[in-house]
Image (cartoon, rainbow, N blue to C red; front, side, top):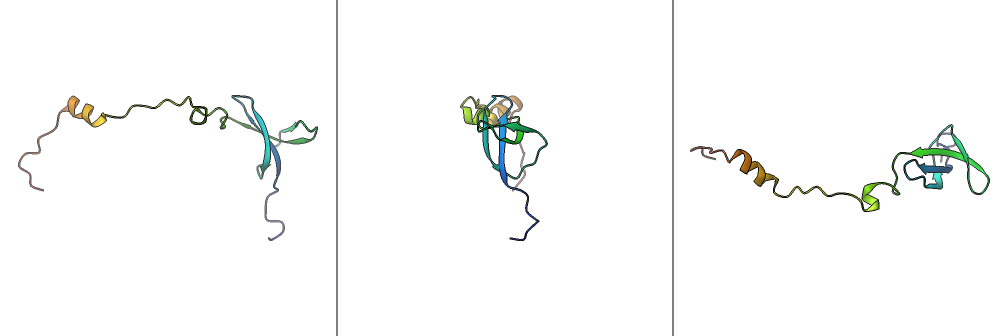
Length: 88
């Protein structure tokens, strides 16, 4: 690899602001905020709005919107327009 063109890749603490879960993993993201991890060392700190800990898809609290019958409801409400004797 060419030296000097790649971003630094190191440990970063990510925190889900909604649920409060924290984890550390390697990333190239940069931030001015820093936090102390359980090992006593200081790492960059990234605050997330949503993660797999709080997103409805991953937590199982996702609501499914019933879209079945949408065409039938449309036709019932507005009726099916007669196209007349148009060929094709």
